[in-house]
Image (tube, rainbow, N blue to C red; front, side, top):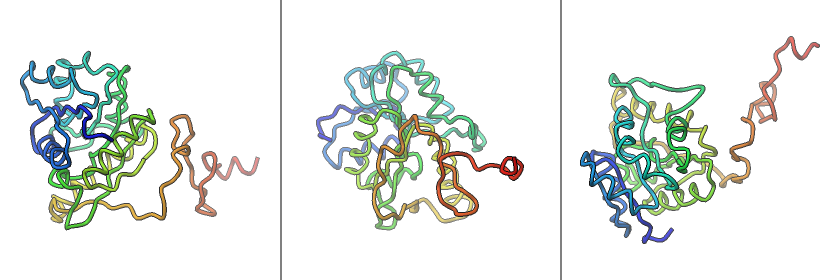
Length: 233
């Protein structure tokens, strides 16, 4: 993706500042804004891509300022739905990213960067090794732009499928936090997805049903495995 792309970052804390530093390092010129309402609106107004790097509990406050201006924009959701006492607030039947898309029906929401610590966002690396960032979204063109953006930062960017897969990525981020802080591995750490080749993006179409794994073979199947009672009918 061209470094001429107009990018706005809302949030000037650890995550927003690290992403801004990383993007400037590779030639982008992101506009950043903290709590100033006029600065937020000005940054979003000229942007094609808006990165939401505010705490999840403050997300509605930010949307109250710039929500209408986000129509037609690519909105990158870096947040994780954590309560004030650092517990997961959503899961199973929805995700923070899906709820954000409902609030911004005219925007193209993409989940990305949420599974890595802020310090890795400047280079895409931890301990000198490239980390994986997973990118999920329903709009293929928007997702491809964020995959390229993440790659330019130094990450190995993986297409994680439709936006509903944020239900998986947000708990993964919570695990990352627990490993880094509670288990003492520190923040110069992260996940790397080892694989043979990139899967076809068509498999992750937003309309595709979930992939279920058959207990007998461990191989993916087209539908939910039947219960023993259902098999006997």
